[in-house]
Image (cartoon, rainbow, N blue to C red; front, side):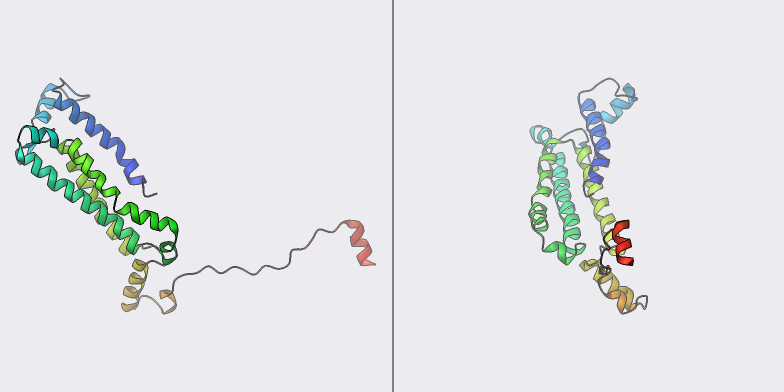
Length: 203
């Protein structure tokens, strides 16, 4: 489920990457874009930095605006990705899950995966990194709202929310406790009895 947002964004990501690559090759027309639109897109800049340029191209051409922007964007991408995952793992996970081996493995990945953006920052064009950074910040804010309003039962965020609602008089004392499932008592299973044995018992 945690990979679903990334999978949804992949078509947009690759489409944007394709358009930027073709624009950097000065292709005459890209898909539904005619030559004029392609030229306009090819010359698009932000703070004087061409959107089609990546870190290596900026370094080789000594365009320090591109280098500086991509450096700042990569830092923001790493920080937002790390903070988003940290919110989930520290606040929205139950105590039982925190004691599992899988949680410990995910905690290690928490410090590794964000640094994959170092590769994207050097390889991908500026426009693509801006899109990715904006998406990360949006996801971080969205995740924060979800954790505060609909936390996982038994998690730290859930206890904080229950205490907050209780202070406002919207919860009873019992509702602040972590919900538990109780097994329903079951009677002894009746064994099937043949008609002949049933007649003997009736006698």
